[in-house]
Image (cartoon, rainbow, N blue to C red):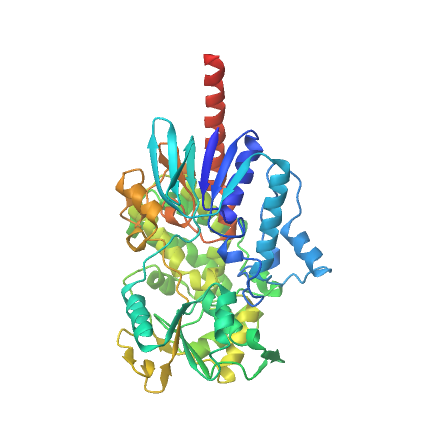
Length: 527
């Protein structure tokens, strides 16, 4: 059996490992423009050390290579460091990239004739009586018995605000640049000493950016105080919808406080499984009601009112001082302050991520209800996908040193002048860094392959989520599967490295292995 995998980052690697463990005689052709397959652009081995995983090493629990003994990520890091790592360590993303590259190398050693890599962008696909064909650099390649799309971040169009700013920068001689690749950003930052830098977005990527523009330029954090190197920008101003930074993950010594009791965990899983079969409003209410008792126990505060507001997408949220918010979040993560209801709820929801993936995989439900549960997941990402504690401490130190200013909310009336972006009366930026990861929405997509498959009817849109409508194992029918962010709605919590190696990927491998066995049986019958 001959299959194609388009997109070969961590998810593509996991898919190849899973399917070759089940069906070793498969032939796989992988298509990815990235120079380092398996690592992908998010975990490139040459990314700066300032770009950290948002998971501590102790929480990175990737299954070993299917069907073979292999080094765990923990052991890989220990070998790389030459010592036993601190359990609170948040490794740089480049270290995970090197680990994934090593897993691909071992996979090739076990299956030397199984895989062929095409380094390029697939622009079209079609199916005929022979199977699937792919267009690469104006040349058709195929036929394939099955096609898997496993893109990390598909190409997306700039939204109206970003497109306006890009044109403005070109015409006025300013700079708009993406947060990644980090190595490109740090090279450009050598030109920005003394300038004011605005950062669009205030999430995990912004934590990386401020680290690259400070520590990455020679600055130091000494006893909680930032010491300038002299190469930094004059001022860094991140802004977002509400102006609030993400909340750091708890230190190891405080984690037990957030552990769910077995009965609490069982009730939450059962509630979510039941809720997915009902309507969206009822689902939000019943999930909030189930979260309230453990959130109240952990925080010591009545959680009902906060949860009723948080799960209502139309509710207004009160403004908060971002510096005080960051200070409190650090104190909660360190265990010096009792957790807020938001922080406690986020830790509870984080513990349910694997359960959520299984429930979405195993349970049919109304698309609007699935979208409502995804909205809860998205709304809690400030906590569940929070940064390392070390990143939050650095951000606060930079604020205190006057290098970073928090407090600006995203405003549509940012003025564009011959001096730059006028964010308010005191701040005019000459450089704009885009740290907003485009949502996995078909309406924003600019990927030629996905758009072609939608036009031809091979893929169908999910109107509830603006993603792709898929069955179990990412099936779109006709031997076509999609794994990853574009399937959010059929799946949930797809941004995690654990999802790459999770239940949907394994289900795809089982589908392909079953098809291979069927093909082999038919071949023997015709012999």
